[in-house]
Image 1 (cartoon, chains in turn purple, orange):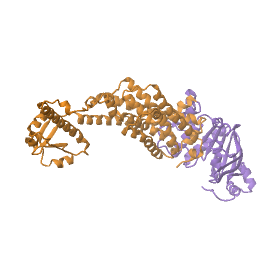
Image 2 (image 1 turned 45 degrees about the vertical axis):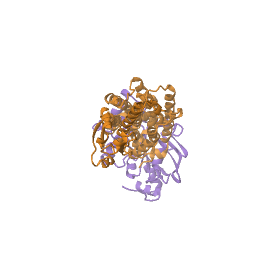
Image 3 (image 1 turned 180 degrees about the horizontal axis):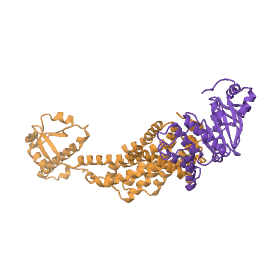
Image 4 (image 1 turned 30 degrees about the vertical axis):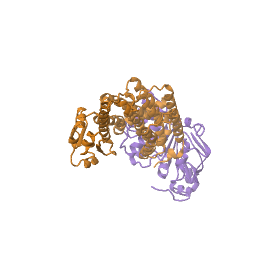
Length: 244
Length: 389
């Protein structure tokens, strides 16, 4: 479970996140929806401990991310905005490296890696070097290394950005599967349809604040609009960022 | 912690060694200097070989007894070409002896007879021939002078109140070290060149590819990441230094050092001393290179910083090589300078005792600790983690 409370972050004169609070439950997919520049990435970075909030707190499975960042990282699996690979390592070696950094080794590590190779359908690329992988293949490798330690909480920053239809579907299937396994899944997106298709719970972020929160139905009801798209426009107050 | 460091270390080395082209570049560092050395020594030896002095003479017929004296001492005499002045200026002739027409008259009447040595004093390569010719002519002058004094019943010693005798204090080992002075310099270069690529790739490359942010998401203390990466850099630098040293040993055994009148001290003890002198530098240089590379947003940018880093500390070293100073104890504490001094002294066959080695190593360790500390701190800075080009 992930709980953010009054997160606030400034970079110089720019306030990236003004005041963000939300709770993401286990066994549920929570979508952070908002236009570009709304503060989604910064919020996620605070949750996954690489950016220190100026104010507010966040906990992952009860672990405070600012007080005990290493322990928080242990229970988190993250697909960040940057998903660079090592061109000279194979897909399997990427997953193994991160597994070892999480303290796994030997047969246990082999098992985790093999399961992910199956789950992400990457048998063909498992032992190929990452040099020349397509966008979709790169995301698969990045997901494999993020999930190798079997984290209870999964954070994904725009996971389907730049992917083709097939890869997008593969990612969606994976997210549903993680949810069915009872994990807490949070992902950010600026694409309304995607959030609508996947999430039980939507947190709409605009200008660094949470402007609406709830199930898709609740959002529609609260704005009095029939379609989620209309509801979204109504909540953020402009058509900014509504694309695709 | 140790296991995590080991994991990072193994990954970095494997990753680096798979890049054949880059990895072989650092091997080149190890090989290039000894090969250069091989060629240089051979060339110097060929200059130095004592060939009979060839002395072109103008007006040989005016001084038959001088000519006889010279050829008795092994000088090859020949007639000077017409355009000898031109040739001396151009450097194709070293020196020409000119015997004027009235030499014979002055000589027979007991006056000082003049001969001219025509040379170009700005030409270094001719200096040896010129000196040899001067020495031979002075020898003849003294020889004849002595004879004349004897003939008048006087001891030649009366005309020589002071005799200058040159005592060359440089032992063969010392001369060798002058020639081998380049060796410490090259070993220091190897310490810089060996890990340079890996340091750039492991910090700046990681930023450029966008793999730093995911890496930092693992529950690993930044210190462990930096240490693992540093150890991989040290491994490359160390291997390059040792490889370079091994090549030098092979080369030194096969070059005609004796022809230069030098004997290099290259036994086991000297080799060990050299390793003890240079290896601590590999620790410090690797840490510094990582620090510098962390600021760079791309591999290319990092390489630029690395080459700048390479030049700055080389300057005192080069000055030391060109104009040797009196060695003082504090100099051992200056990284790069200290290592070059130590290796030089070891080569010269000096007995140093452990103190200079400890001072030099301690200063390297200090530089290492500071660099690693700062690099670790940088990994917590948002502008480093997220700042990408």
